Length: 166
Image: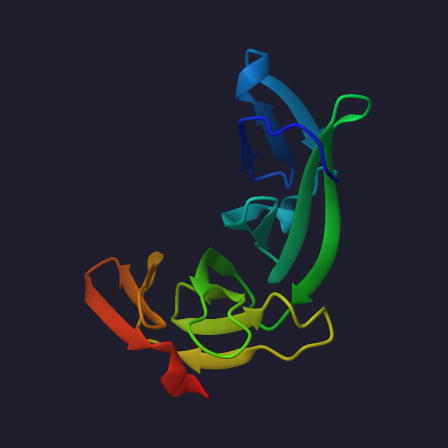
């Protein structure tokens, strides 16, 4: 999946569709996937220039690759599917790893505070690191030094050391 870089955006919806929007071509939209509300897209997060993750309502976390070529146009390819550990993902965020292989982990979480951290280099058979954070949760952002800041309705922000989960 190589070729000229285009400015794109990826969105997802409650029916499970992924939509790629090419901002270079007046917002041309390419749609991927089928409509199934159990596959509702709950979160999207880029973790490299050509890879992103999708968190779905059914607990699946998918790794997708993006490419563009003049001959073929845009291309999204499902690379891996992780998950099933969480019943209802609220959102996901990418967490750069400061130790080990220097890769990226994807952190999925439920409103109740159940969290699953997936190493995106490990492949679909890898077991996630599971932990809990005081909920309710609705958002999370990566902080430096392998930490994450969680927040939610009527809940103070919580800084969590992700290295402490191991």
